[in-house]
Image 1 (cartoon, one colour):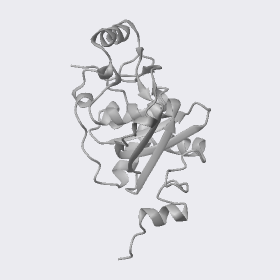
Image 2 (cartoon, rainbow, N blue to C red; image 1 turned 30 degrees about the horizontal axis):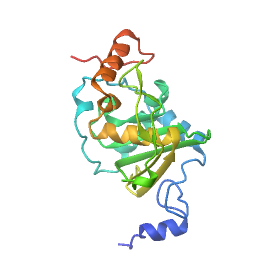
Image 3 (cartoon, helix red, strand yellow; image 1 turned 90 degrees about the horizontal axis):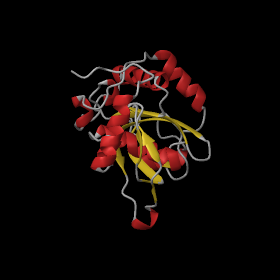
Image 4 (cartoon, rainbow, N blue to C red; image 1 turned 135 degrees about the horizontal axis):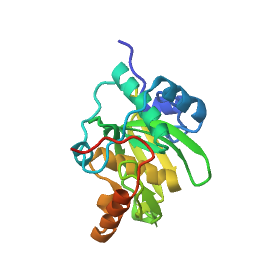
Length: 221
């Protein structure tokens, strides 16, 4: 059995798995973004989106332990589902799958497009001096047609694994940072409305009840 490279050695070589990495070991998820997203989507099939009230959204998902063809097919379906619903990020439980994996196709505040996959994500705890809150509006495919101001840090780092099981680190600013935090929350059983006051949560659910989703959803029993 050949000895595997350490994460540091992979970073020094500029390749840590599916995507290249920079000198600090963070994935370079901006290269060939359009081509990579299109390839995933072409192989996948869009699935309906689960909505608030579905039990799979309200519990911590199972860790990904198998990094094979089934996971690859799931990732492809997630990209297809994300595009069909016009989303910028999608967690597996949003299409009814109890696994800790999310995909993203999201621009940051500078208009740079980021495309990638994170399995078993963990948000890095930031020191106080780096925790600047942004209370912009936030929405969710699983709470369709509703939006509410939701405080999030304007910078985020997530560690995890890519779809082949290689360790990854992803960082983002602005809107992309919000996306990373939002999708990680999903996999631990939290929706953005769980971070709102009772009044704001009630208002978001009212917006959802009065609106009509523009994509297929899974009916709650």
